[in-house]
Image (cartoon, rainbow, N blue to C red):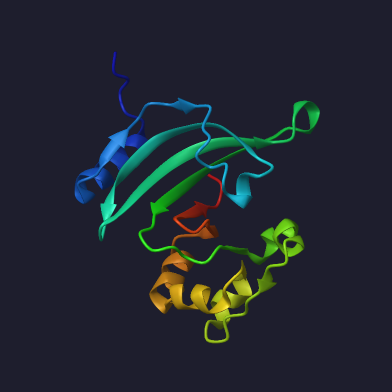
Length: 171
């Protein structure tokens, strides 16, 4: 039968109702839709759940909780996070952004340069941005995008061109 909603699911249901979105409380296992992202190159997503989805300004968006792990057996580290996935109509440059302490050495190895946002002192000191098309990436990060990210504790954003992933600090 239907389980009563957890307090988190109730909050999500309220948000979904306000946005005219749908809440799906079912649990998905064997999640592969994160595979194209750098972030999950060395992480395995075990399950996704508490998904709300709908559209904003014509873009499809879903927000979901995920459990994932890195390593196996005695080196296994388990984490939880909330992720937003946005389907884009226009392709964006490929890039990753993270809070400075989360430096992704892989992206550095992949030859992405660190783009410093001269006009966003606070943003630039908190976030590390790597991308293939500096002007395209800069054009995307309008001041309101930057302040949204700062306010919502987003610590990682990654574009794979046709999709954007936003990840919050682990719950």
